[in-house]
Amino acid sequence: MDIDSRVEDGMLVLTVRSPRLDAARAVTFKECVHSLLRADAERVVIDMAEVDFLDSSGLGALVAVMKMLGGGRRLELANCGAIVRKVLMLTRMDGVFVLHDTLPPGPHRGRTAA
Amino acid sequence: MGPAMSEEVVRLRLRATPDGVSTELDRLRGLLSARGFDAALGANVAIVLGEILNNIVEHALAGRDDAWIALKVRRHAGCLHVETRDEGRPLPPGLLTSGDLPRHGTTTEDLPEGGFGWFIIHSLTDDMVYERAEGQNRLSFSLCGQTDRPPAGAVIH
Picture (cartoon, rainbow over the protein chains, first blue to last red):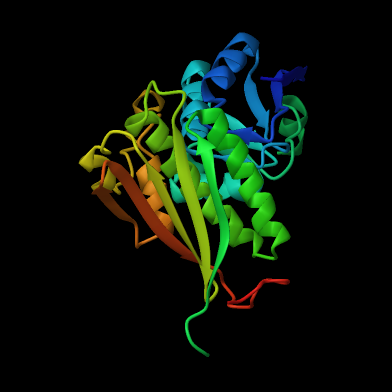
């Protein structure tokens, strides 16, 4: 699975280059994200802009990724489309992940605004 | 309203693999959208059907890459009636009755990674029927749009 990875100001941004995060892709997605995670990233944000379909297997994969983060870090999801949001809300997982309408600014830039 | 009008929207057979399910759901959403069905209704059909088809692939037809699932979608008065048939093993009865949300637990480690599927199905539809007959699993459900406006270009019999 194609996932772009970049670090912005201590924040790891993973952009999923697939229109679906579903049973056919859940395992590859987990493996791919696992290989891209970095211990030095304070925050991990997945850019979901291109994902227009999520099923329960895809949701399980997102939970598995959050468990990989460790250290109490919560997985952040940005740019979730209508179906992704719907599945997160139905399963009440919208409160488990940190959701952003757009990509958030990096942690240091974010902090100056507070 | 006149007499009951029912129209076949889709009838197809799909390969019972995760990739087969993925591809056909994409096509189905495109087709429903092209037929003028409301995007939210198309999304709900894809969400529920995705869970059902993947459960069939995983439980009824596990290890059988050559198997097929028959899918039929009919439109009736603003609602879509969806039926699947497969010749796999009977579905585990627990799957069909447990519509509960898996417990979230108190820590990240406790979070469930599965068990969401039937909860999602039961959240979106309340008329799921499962029958086992003639060596087949038959599942059916219906979903209704927010408006009863007939889709553009629909042929009503």
